[in-house]
Image 1 (spheres, rainbow, N blue to C red):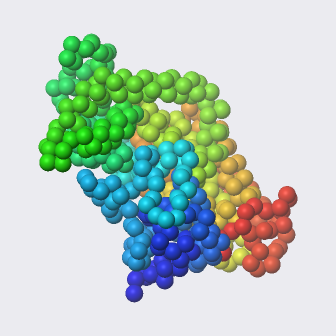
Image 2 (image 1 turned 90 degrees about the vertical axis):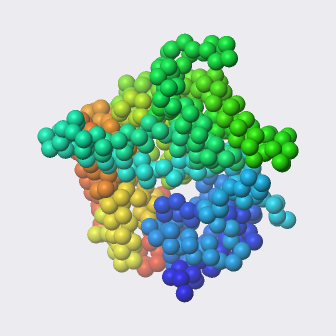
Image 3 (image 1 turned 60 degrees about the vertical axis):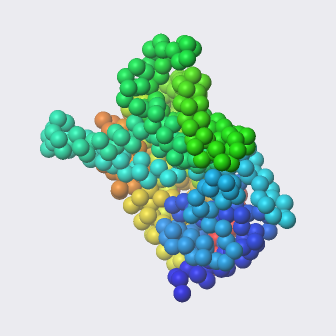
Length: 490
């Protein structure tokens, strides 16, 4: 029997049965259910299951936190008869129902009416689906770039050496060819052929086109004048283009006879979309990106405001899934400017949570809570994964959230004072250390990390040592000022 088979069956039953599951997928630590009738899910029962660390509704989904073994649990959940495992289904040219729901197709064929997610939920779910496959790779190449920068600064390797050039090609290629990668996942998410989407993205980076498309150059296409832009490293233009491509492909399939679709749909798609990217979606996307960059550059003029805000609250933005709106902007700024300020301060909330978990592990009076805090602290320290700590420990008492925000804010203030920034994207934690260490502002950044951990640790330790002792099993409703926070997962 599979290791998590019993939990999988109980979980599916608690969400309303297999017939209520329109689809299930997973991220780093969560199972993500799209339910036909969200009201049929019994959240308290889900929380009471031993392997559930927490449950929440976000991005139009019911999300169950199970921790680092989520891939094993997902496999067992997908094996439950009747469950549609959307994460393993490829889009079909003639069966729209076979692919995951998108922002243009959110309804479910069933007798039970589905609750249509809000526009914001649909936006978050769409951006998440587009970027999630690339996040581990972005973090990985950030580490490679950080290690290379460190060994060059230490004089162990020359930038002109073949070893450096070969290894540096990995992070450089991922960022430069991002339009190709996003063309694939965005086209798939918008219900179009991901392979055609990738070809559209690749066309924009063809060396001959790049040679004449330097920023600001005046070109013409079919006699139509336009100002060229370089698409390398870009994000927003390809997202807009793939959104339009989704409608274009559906329209072509609707009007072209079946016998002609095999050849004419991809042919007309690339012939229409590549010029449209140059004439329409490129200028619009770069205009949006320029406006965002100008607003961002204005904000970094006030680092004492930006640093504490991102340090205190970015971890909670991640918690509700809203970071998928900000992350593409941050990645675009990092790619185009070579440095990014808000991600440096934003990661300090993770370290502040680590301080909370360490204090709970040492000073909390409940043995089970200490064990949960210890394991959550380990994965946070190692890889920057926060869900086990947020849903397994912090959610038990609102003061844990307050101490997390306090530690992150103080660390963010230090980042603001020192104008700390990163030069490579990476997760927080031990694995991401080289990427952060390669920044010219690494010293103040690590001081901010230490202070964030220390402040939240001390605040939590004092809280744990001074609050009244409670009976076993009542940890979630401890007697603290103004009452405790929401109920904890059992």
